Length: 206
Ligand SMILES: Nc1ncnc2c1ncn2[C@@H]1O[C@H](COP(=O)(O)OP(=O)(O)OP(=O)(O)O)[C@@H](O)[C@H]1O
Ligand SMILES: [Mg+2]
Figure 1 (tube, protein in one colour):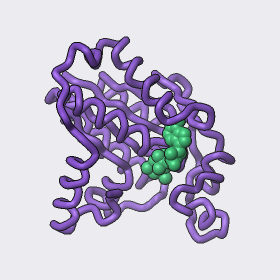
Figure 2 (figure 1 turned 90 degrees about the vertical axis):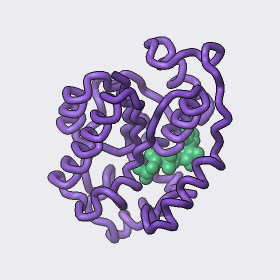
Figure 3 (figure 1 turned 180 degrees about the horizontal axis):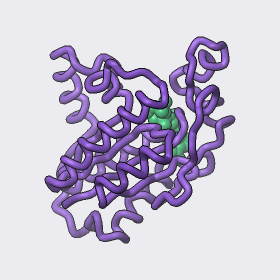
């Protein structure tokens, strides 16, 4: 039995950035892990779903179920998905058991100022209905295992905080206890290029 590390938070709060960082570090430590990013899942796995509460809940439950299967088979599932509704998150927690929730805590104003994908501007202009934080709810986690204040911490600081927490929980061995592998961003890049060539994941970040 492994565990699931779920990054939840507003758009632009840092879920993709931090999940990728943690995932790569786990791979370097020789730990079997998979990264499930909400954007990529929506493109390849949940294409038919929209952004109603019902569809969002289905999407989050699907990701939860895949995470359950992976974790049950000793693979760490690292998830980056807004998961705005507390109830859907709670159901996943129950299903998965070893479920570590990381709340990417970032004020809306900061996430909006970052506007990494230009979506906030479009949401404010009324071009995107049901946009989390603007015209759709985000229910903040009440008791997440970990909170990263991404408006006040650097990416590096947040990453160290998360990895140290996983070490303290004995879920991840410390670096000096691992046979380190040379797993790099380029390895990921190549894998993603192969997928893209096969017609998958057109919005994959490479
Ligand atoms: N401590 C931090 N942790 C994570 N990201 C940070 C931090 N400090 C600054 N940032 C910046 O904030 C931005 C976060 O964008 P990112 O794409 O990771 O958000 P997201 O939560 O995945 O959004 P979305 O839900 O739209 O996919 C990046 O540009 C990142 O460099
Ligand atoms: Mg993201």
